[in-house]
Amino acid sequence: MGLARRWGKGWRVFRQARMIARAMESRRHPILAHIIPIRRCNLSCGYCNEYDKVSQPVPTEVMARRIDLLAALRTEIITFSGGEPLLHPELDELIRRIRKHGRIATLITNGYLLSVERIRQLNRAGLEHLQISIDNVQPDEVSKKSLKVLDKKLEWLAEYAAFDVSINSVVGAGVKHPEDALTITRRALELGFDTTVGTIHDHQGQLKPLPDADRAVYEQIQRERKPGMFAFAYDNLFQKNLAAGLANEWKCRAGSRYLYVCEDGLVHYCSQQRGYPAIPLEKYGAEELEREYWTKKACAPFCTVSCVHRVAMIDLMRDEPRRALGEFYPAGMPAPIRMLSELFLPAESGKPQGRAAKFMAGAVKKVLGIR
Image (tube, rainbow, N blue to C red; front, side):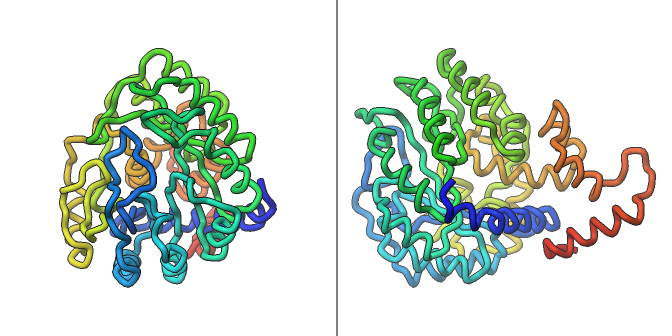
């Protein structure tokens, strides 16, 4: 890990912990919003339905207003997606706008436009997390997001980025060389990045079951990638079923805890369900958040949209903490999670909490700014 990233890591971890604590305290605000500053992309990946080749950037003052509206809803994380968000000429100013509101600013990019100076500009703007999805080792007619093209960019990120970096690889039907995902994961780990692995979905975000070769690669990646505690829990709760082609039983909170704001300023469930509910952001408020929190989504059982899954995990933890912990960590809780559960959850025995535990729980809540 580069020195610049090491220096800021502790503060970012604290901000993320505070975000989760606030999300656990109240369900009446969005946890994550994806916002589109430009629909145009500099690539034309064959599987992608989230770009065009003609759109102009959303005017900066319009984007700033949307960021203000998301902050007014108390949205915790605001992520720029696309299209290719680095094509927006005032992206750095928009990142600063998010940070001015005290929100977490993140970016999803194909990485092509990164340079050493561009990385330094993102550092100065206050970006906190960047994700790149790499589809293959060698570019092909379906995707140019290849390790061969992007490896130098990854080296620059490892050396110069002051923000966290996550590299996503993909497996599933339509991937020519599933073993590429393992090569990409290993390279990301070598450079000190977080890693995720996704499953290919159709144009409605629905599952395509993994062929046997892809399943074997997926399982090998899971053995090697050493996911963090939250990612490990996600793998247990969602990814194992998806890899096996099985439905997940869960409550989708899209339109409430997760918002997708398109370039026209309309709020949708997610990138794969655009058109629902399609309400202008300036008209979106407490009533809409409450309604969509409880709305059952027919697409949920075979959904592969991981960001919506991860948001739902926080609400499961808040509503049914012991059940959630059992599903997240079936082989036993990691020590930090066990310690926190002892601090904040009533003892299974019914025994009252001791004075020392009460004092420690109060101190932690005060630090995180929750009641």
